[in-house]
Each structure stands twice: as structure tokens, then as C-alpha cells.
Length: 277
Image (cartoon, rainbow, N blue to C red; front, side):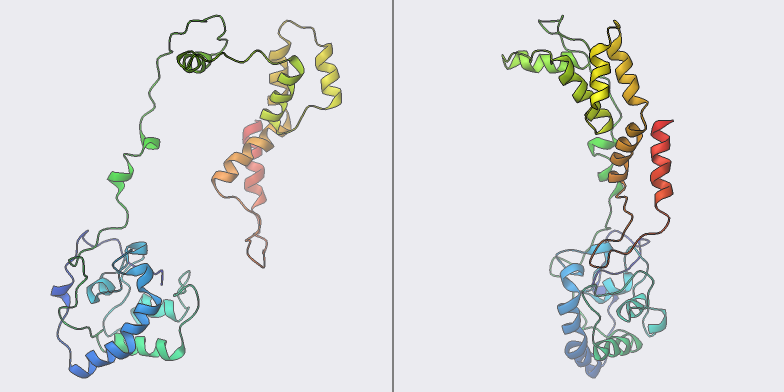
């Protein structure tokens, strides 16, 4: 029951101190009508094992505290409780449990439970000690390698310095020499052209391009061919695709209906123009 709940609460919460006493008949109502619904539909995602969106539903304090989407329930105010909106499939973007709507009887029981003040047995605390942690630790994530400052590496010394033609070649050659492996011989001109065309545009060279390349005797012909492919429209189309993959670009929703997502193509065309400009 992947649901709601607020981020403005302490990283550790003591649940036991927040449970008032309730009449025996209300506790019986909770045990017979509410706890089974929570166990069957909610606690796999919001129990002691894991707390999706920072939400716990295995304690009264956890329900009251909520998680990343705000307070999930307000005692005696089901109309102000996001939990009730979600199980009724009324909340915008929240329909819980996601696998299917609860029965009308279960929804009515949960609504009544909130109206009663959310009765819960006193002293009913999580097995691991009654604590939960905030769902996202920014300081811990900041240590990831991708967030570290870029450091310029020293170019390694190599034995065959004449082989290196680009700044990256010494790094490759140093590893080959350390492993006592020979470097590959230089590719034939047409093989290099094919690699260039596919790398830059995603397409092999055409027959016309091959003929022009073979007839090109300029000393700096290779530089001109690199520029030619970089200046082709296909360059932007190919490299915009990498960015669209990263942003999970799609023009349809997928699934069994695969409805069209309107007005996505301007973003696609903007990316292509950006690479080609």
C-alpha cells in the first residue's frame, strides 16, 4: 500500500509514547477489522522490513507521523486523512493499495477507525525497537563517486611513446604493457571510416561516401571526414537518443493500452537541434 506521508518529522520516532488508551470494544474492532486489512494489504511495503516513501503502518505513531507526502491520517477526521482518500481512490496520484481497490466494507471499517480516533493497543511497538529513519539520507548519497569533483589524472609513462596519438592512448597502452599484451595494429582506412560513421551517426557509410573517401587524397582528409559526420543531421539524432534514454523519454505510456503522450516530440526535436547547433 505504497502511500503518502511527510518529511517534516524527526529521523527517529518513539511510537509507544504516542498511543493513548482506548475502550476494550474499540481495541477489539481494531484487532478484528483493521489489523487484518493492514497486514494483508499494507505491511509488505510499509512495515518493519521496509518503509516505502518513509511510511510505516505497523504502529499508530507511524500512521500519524506519515512520510514523504504529508500526514497520512488525522485522528477523528477521515475527511482530512490522505490515507482515506487513497483507499477510496480519490487522492490525485495515490490509489492504494496499487494492486487493487479494497472492498467497500474494508474502506468503511478504516473510515470508522479514523473517526474513532484510530484505536490501537497500548504498548504495541515495532519489533526492532520502535524506530524508523528518514527515507533519504542526502549526506550519505553525496559520497557517491558520481558527485565527487573531477580530478585530472596524470598521463602514465609508456615504453612505446610513438604509438600514442591521442591523450587517451597512453592510458590504454600502459595497461597493455603492464599485462604484457601487444596493442592492436591500426585499422584499414575503410574500417576506420565505418567505425567513425557508426559511432557518430549510428549509420554505416553509404556507397557514395565510401567512393568519396577513397578518392580523398588531402593530407588532413581524416579531420575533414570527422567534421563531416559531426556536422550531419544524424549526429544530433543519434546523440539526443542517449540523453532521451537517460531521461526515459517516451511518446506513449506503454502497458496494454499504450496511449499516446501528447506534445512530447518538441522536447525530442529541441535536443536534436541542441546537439546539431
